[in-house]
Picture (cartoon, rainbow, N blue to C red):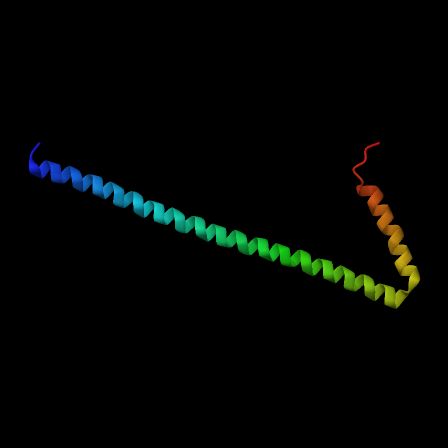
Length: 91
C-alpha cells in the first residue's frame, strides 16, 4: 500500500468519525427539543390541575355562601354517592 493510499484510508476514517459526530449532535439536539416540549406540556398539565382544584373549591364556597347549609349537606351526600360509585371494592 503506497503512502497516498494510506492517507486516503485515513481521510475516509476521519470523515466517518466526523459524520458520526454530526449525526450524534443532531440527535442530541432533537432529543433536547422533545424533552423541552414534554417538560412544557407536563408543567401546563400540572398548572391546569392546580387551577381546577382551586376553581372547584371557589365554586363550592360560593355555593355554600349563596345557598347555605343545604348546599353543603347536599354536596356531602353527592360525594358519598360518588365514593360508592368509584369504590374499587368488588364484594
